[in-house]
Image 1 (tube, one colour):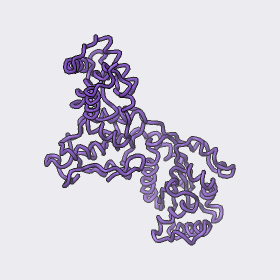
Image 2: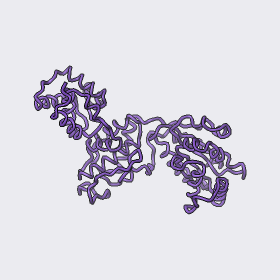
Image 3: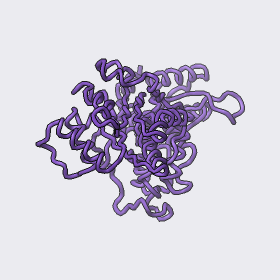
Image 4: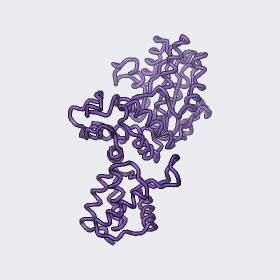
Length: 412
């Protein structure tokens, strides 16, 4: 059982007896350490987030050097590394502080999972006392308990509020204000604060008092990853999670191409994980393009039937030719597609259209999102258009087209 990006439980029919620790040469698994693909795994390095890491480190330098509390606001779309970077930063800072003779710890609370000030405080207190009761303490009492914990432990706490917009919508900005003014009562602040959100206007949502404690220069943007960045991330994770030679480069290319639409590293990593599980289900010795397409259909189910119904006979034949060819490879050239189209036309007794008309059909299918046609990259002589099937496994697409063609609909 696993969960997709929407939090829905998904069952993969993984073959009985699979052990991700075993060698792929036994035919049991392509994984050597599947945990490296989990959302909880935080890599030692954050590729393509060096600038953001340096900025956070600069903001928190006074904490290590003089014990002065700091704040930061990390914002950007989902899957752009905000939460992972905050965890990596806080863990590294704790080591640096320890070397300087200071104790720094951190706690991360997802404000969408723990809704409201009371629930957020409970999540923070559970870090220090897992048996702390869920009920029976007011917010002021919980704050006082937290203060006592920090003073007894002589520790500075970095509070990371993920999806903080949910907290502000539920309870306002009072808790944020309280943490930023933590030292006023005792004269020594033991709390720093990192806010994380997909929203860009979080500071504007705070009341004037809370907003005054946050400098706008402390806001750090996390833009969507581009294709090359997603490729690098997918390759690093694949090397960590899979046995050598089980994830071909064309699979990494396909993962990067699919995830590029969203700029989402989580999506790319999840595609790798589900593709690996599908490969294991088939007792395959490597992850293939069809496994990636199957993973996409599992994570982001795509309904293409309506688009298929709009196709006439000729366009269905073109798409069938591409789907059949794509079952064995991630990308094909227009020449390969046209040759496959010729064979399909002979099979169904249809006249083959000329190259110019064939090219138009490719453009139509690309516009519908049923194929992805683009110019090849470096290393290929000339400007060659390469074609892939992005929406679903090519095998399934071919089966649906064959059923449609044999049953007769779509002939116009």
